[in-house]
Length: 119
Length: 226
Image (tube, rainbow over all chains, first blue to last red; front, side):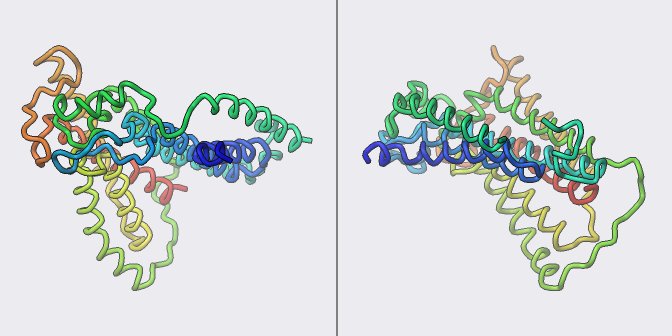
């Protein structure tokens, strides 16, 4: 129980990552695969943020002078995730554009029916 | 069969993750460098928001690379979606009066809020990436509400290139005036005021323009060409 209490964010993050991986591995519809990619992306971001968390943490911003810096969370993972979110959006958009072209070319989004994509 | 293999693979991955997670305690400080940034960040960079100090100053070169990734994604999307047939316009149903009026009313407010977020990036939570995303959401509203209006591609490309150029040129100034790329050569001023932290606000405004125009052009190509 204590493991569950202390690791609930890790469990949630890796739950999202595993759900995303499962969708990517199993689903045949390309849109669903892209949704799985988005869920996986969210899980990775959540994991990075929760690694940097410190108990009773506050944001690493000195919004007024003399603020106590003892409980500030680690700023490095936040800086990484900040850019990773925007790049995740761009990668999703690029994947969706490829899906649009695939649909226009083959007339289907089912990866089973696209000869070059079957595995 | 495929599902069984996938579930087996996921179980193996989950067991491996569980082994390694036991070594990573939750809620304790882990990196020395994070502590260093919090303790010395204000003095060294002048930015009150330590995340901004890390993104723009300590790891500014990294951020340049990430902005480039975004740029390449936007270009790739344009290259994939642009059709060779020009001049064909799709028929669109005009939006209802409520949506039309609402988006015209809200767009300036969203734009001002996005600008506020990236100008105050070194003082409050926020910055170029967030402000750019907010501005792009305003343009998405324009696309939804005023469907016959097209957003000028030239303007968005201009803002995009200008943002990138400002970022690189300020970095090169640091190389010329001092010793390394992206040196904070401007005076840092007093912390917690709008004009402080040297080059950080300038670079974050450039990033805001760049991210906003790139996300807008992504939305534009998905709606117009897709």
